[in-house]
Length: 232
Image (tube, rainbow, N blue to C red; front, side):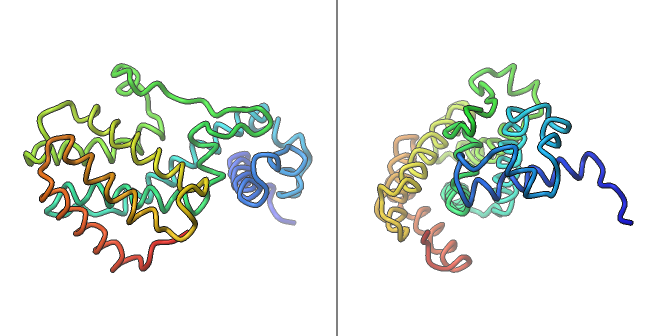
């Protein structure tokens, strides 16, 4: 007889099942009955291990941020910190394109069964410094990258959090629109929208047009050499 799975194992299976259901059927598919069937358990498993669907959705969102952090963590720093910011944006984009339904839940854009994942007010310095939060951890990659560009003199002096938040807002907005289909489905938006956006943001934050353009070209060429053509 196989040993009974631990509570931790069951919770992990439920989260993985939730992510599969989201990917295959969208937020409408995320139901206690379907989750239980996915892991061969009763519907009580959701309530026993999470107390309800709300806590399960929160854990799915945390897993989304963990996966985003893992992908951002694969981006290696180079001698060009401005190029590294675009490379982080491309890694962010790839993460969302690979599973848009998961990230709609992660960022509170989707509410399965009316349940919206709990979000953190990142404008509060006290909150950012007092919480151990998966979203703050993921955002930290962009904060550190912004600091490197400021320290290198490419961006004018400014709080790195503020700079990172502006960059995040722009990149996330672009990705949201692309995933929704507004820029086609072949990745053309990267060349026509994202790269010019990154260049314009760099110039707006203090970089020269020539330097920003050069960094964007370095990043996209290195990304394509490693990852191949960009597409959905």
